[in-house]
Length: 372
Image (tube, rainbow, N blue to C red; front, top):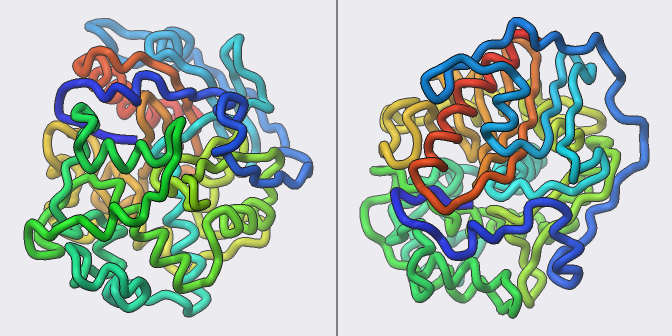
């Protein structure tokens, strides 16, 4: 859910990543599955040719999942299920918290609204949410929210429980409260569009804008997306005391249904969903030079850039991923037609270990797609 340069968020190491709705049945709202047949089976993946450099040696697929505390690994290629693996405590029916992978689902929702003509990416935020007209988001556009170039005064760091970031996350905790009043209090720091800063508040504002533009709350919008994609199983979306969703980090779904989110980013067409023409290209590509892979702050990653709530691994956005805290990935190779979902439960007690495991995944996921 966050990408801190150093230190540990008290909440991130304690996230319930497997079936979180069971420990918080009030906060998580059900997203109904369709009960349809899952992906058709394809030829089993042969991992024999996979060799990944890790910890000064070469490792295979099994050791990679062990090193990264894997909970599931699903591979789609050519629309068929080539590989499906779960840790002993996980099953094909387990709802796996995607954390910030949820942001990429939000991007799909925004794309659908734009395709219906309900939302213009060039519009200022305040056109849809007048309450934000006197704060830091007053001159920010929808596209700048998508690329996290809002320029607002925000540090994505949950170490200090009194920080705005920790307060925002706390609105969705054990004692939930309303979260949107906090968004109105955020000030501007630099000119919108002039810098990148990873910012879950941008995602929350983006969903507020989407909701006002469409008249559809996030739970309903995700439910409609779920039905139209043909997602098999129920998913769960975390909300605050006022029913506002944690659109930047609160969706839990099965691994095969996370794969449908990735498949939609391949071509823009899955089931009954048709994203606007060119959207997968546009959302997968960095829109500014400082958003290109290798140009983001080094504390975030040296392997990816930033598109529209997706993380491209190349300038053309042909290889792109959703990325969530503690090892949640939905990786897409758009040239090969491959989707790799990898969920994890690695500890967050050591930031160097966290960074090493994330870097290892950024190297391994393309290699897995290649052998598929």
